[in-house]
Image (tube, rainbow over all chains, first blue to last red; front, side, top):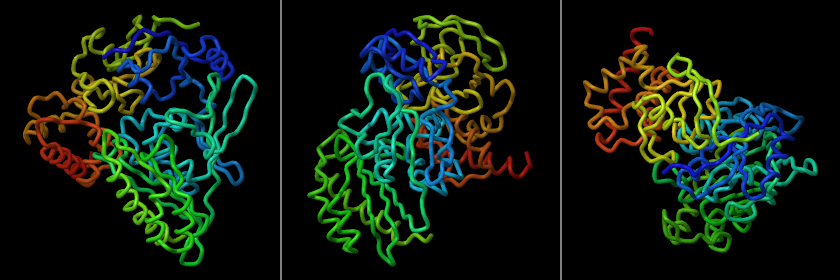
Length: 282
Length: 162
């Protein structure tokens, strides 16, 4: 199908983008990489009156170190994150996850900020940011603010972003020597949305793990922390961690799989990801 | 400030183009309907099939997930351009000789995608070829012959030092 008619404005500054968002409440969408938005326009699942293109705002793009944080501009293309030496060193979880996100032609265009703001419950990046204790920087009409990833994802395709807010950057604590991470997912075809996926971080604690963060995706409306399994894994009891997933996540049937299969696959992923984290060497 | 119609200037296969386009028109529809470049195909129109793959400023993108209006000032290349310059002539020959196509609908997208892989990874493994082509559907061949063709060209290019 073809999109319904809409207006187009290319923002020349962040302030202009914020101003344009306020002109037509509910009828304006920001155009970042467009790899989800334009698909929804083509299918007429969304019919905005105006698209505000922020691809010209180069200040929103790039990866830099800010003391003990890695700062990734919202408009940084996924391919740049995939290939970045800084990401591989300071946020290796993202380097593991990126090849699972769609396909090369889509990663050339898709942005990290777009994926986070869209908040698809089966997408990789929201879960990664949750596992990484990332912070999300937002600019709006009343200024700038920062929201923790744990507080950012509110519901199905729903985030802490207000109607006039622009997601500007992601802040991730840089990985220390004892940082461990793991990532895996089940998908029908490499690059498809996950049936179930798991992004995890921890700190090495002798042969074991501590400060475990397990963020599942594809099992609920938002990334879901498996808090009971986190405690069990930190106590070194993998079997108990897998068993406790039934109290942590409550996947529903969807177009890809039924709930029982998803619940089973979540346990398989936990064993695989725990192995990645315990076998890793600094 | 905003408009349903926009004037754009871009280069397509090396030629400067000035057109007025509807904001809602996708790049692949612009190439096909306004410029008559029908080598890029319209399949699923939501990013799954890869038949609309074209190059935008040197990297492959989905022609159905990019708006023509976003290409103001950009450099666009299509299968017609790559065919004219002979950039992927060896891939085209290999696809033909190895029966890596039947109906040909996916072939332009496959060629652009394979050409990008071979530009960054001179002799990729068969697994890497499959991964890179994972976003391009072929409903005729079963992919095996396509992987064969890409692998053969990779080895031939590496062997001839080009």
